[in-house]
Each structure stands twice: as structure tokens, then as C-alpha cells.
Length: 417
Image (cartoon, rainbow, N blue to C red):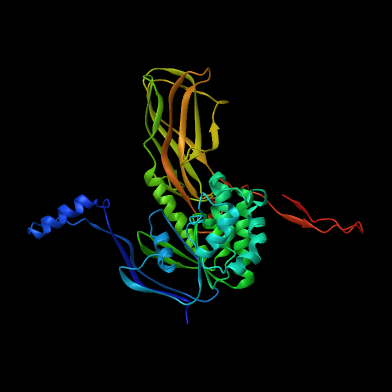
């Protein structure tokens, strides 16, 4: 029997502000007089969500902000109830939905360990037994008798996480806690989560935006989209779908081209990306050949004109740049196009745009703009797609391994690229 059953759950909220007492009385009086009252529209935070979770399964829930992830976890933690449908949970639940939310500012860290532990259902004797471990994990030995209101936000979060993960429960429900504290503490949180999952065979539901991190610890992923289950399956397939949807959204949201300089002598009509068939496109395959074409008109004779084309990400991180400074061109008035041919596009899957600078060798700028001709690099190879949040491009390398037989002293294997 599944340990968690979510049966066609829908959760609706009324949009608009909470009503004051005065406004409520006015609405009641108008209703008694028979006057029609405008209804505030309903918003579906969850829309017919249906899935089951088996004992020992580690389920990650991903999706954009507002997709319904946290609302779903609150249903499972019995903090909220469905408008329609049902949620069945078999076993003790430890919710880590708002880490540190139960801490009281005027109480010391020591007092908060006992109070927050009681709120989470941990017996007092068990808290005493685990107290030193909780404090050591939170790295707050020096400050445990200091009021929480004097803690930094990171210190409070560390204490809240340490208390919450000390619970012995059948089901652990986690919302974004793998992003708490500094990088070193995040590593500790991740290690503790892995220990809880692997060593104690707990059933875990975890929400997060670090999809690759969830992919590492989860046995299954659900992709939420506008309150619905968009995909449910193996982590690699679902995470790839998530990144494709994210890239599509990023490309659609890119701003218009940012022009810095436009001169009278030279008019740029278009900057185009063309695939290996010569067709204008906004989607290119990883390691495919392509052409960046600049179509322009020269109105006055220009000597020693050079072209600079660089690639940047959607958040304007410069990736690579190319130019023809060693071979400038002379132009008489007329219409032209300049092609920059790329035999193999080595940037990893993601969304990119071009920056174009045109000017003379001595630095006279004729045209300069960025965020031009945005395009998306895609790949059907999961091993390539999963690298897109780890870097910007992949080197072309070769691997060779050699066993060192010339010495009795053990030596590490040598890799030659």
C-alpha cells in the first residue's frame, strides 16, 4: 500500500485583499437588503493533482514560482486541506516547510530547542538526548544561551534545520531547506539529507529550485506547472524537460536589442542566426555549424572597417568573442552582408544572444548593440544537457589512461588530454 495518496486534489483561493470588519458589515447589510454582491475570482493553486508515493521513495517536486509546489507540501503536512479531492498519509510526518518559523526571538537558543521541538512533536526526553547533537550541527555552541533576536538570519536557519531534522519520522517533507545558510552549511544539510534517505530508508518529499541537486538525491521527480502535474517520472527525463521549458521561457522574456551607437555612415538592417542549411533560425543543435549574418548598408565610403561579434547569456555573461581586426575591409556605398561562420557550436545548451560592434581600426564606432538575435542551443543527449548549469561550453578533449609499471611505488593514474 502506498504511504502517500494524493487523489484528484484541487485547492482554490479567493483573490483580493482580506476584508476589514467595516467592509464585512457593509457587505452583510447589502446582502440582507437583497443587493447583488460581486464575487472575487477564484484562483486554483492546485488543479486535479493525482499521484502516489511508495515507502522509501524519494520524490522531488520542481517547477516555476507559483506552480503549486509549496501548496502541495502543506496539504501533505496537514497544514492546509483540499477544496476537492483527498490526501491520505500513512505514518508520522516531519515537515520542514518553513525552517525556523517556530523560533521565538525573546527566548534563548537553548529554550527554543525545547519549545520548537515540542511544536514539532518531539518528546522532552528525546530533545534532552539529542540536544548536544542539535547544537553541534547548528555550530552554535558559543551562542546557545543568547536570545534568538540577536542571531543573524543564517544562525536562526541553522538552528531550525538542526531541530527539524532530528525528528524520527516515517515521512520527511522538505521545502527549499537545501538552500539554507552559507555554502559550507548547505553541504552539511545535503549530507544530512542523504544520510536520512539512504541509511534510514525514509520516505521523502522535497521541493527545490536546484534541480541538479534534487536529481542526485531523488528516485523520482514531478514537474508542476500552473497547479497541474506536467510530468512525473525518472529524474533525468523530468529535469531535462524542466530545463527545456525554462530555456523557452527565458528566450521569450529577453528584452529588445540594446543599441549603444548607430551612425549615419552605416545602417544595420538585421543580425541573423542561420543553420547549416542557410535558414534563419532561433534554435541550433549543440556542436552544429551555423552562421551569424550582419546585413547592412554603407552610405559613405569607410576604410579599414572591422567587425566584432560576441556571445552572451540571457543575464549578459560574456561567453566568447571573435573579430576580424587582422583583416579589416574597405567599403564603398552599397548594400552588404558579413558572415561569421562557426563550424561547430561548442557552447552548452541554453539561451544566448549576440553583441555586435562595427568600427574602424583606429576606434571610430559605427555601430554597437547587444542582446541581438537571441537563440537557443539544444541537445537530445542527456549527458550534454545536464551540464548546462555547470558551465558555458565544453572543451574538445581526448582521454587516455596509462598504468605506471616502472616503479613499485603506487602512483595515481595519469590522464592525458
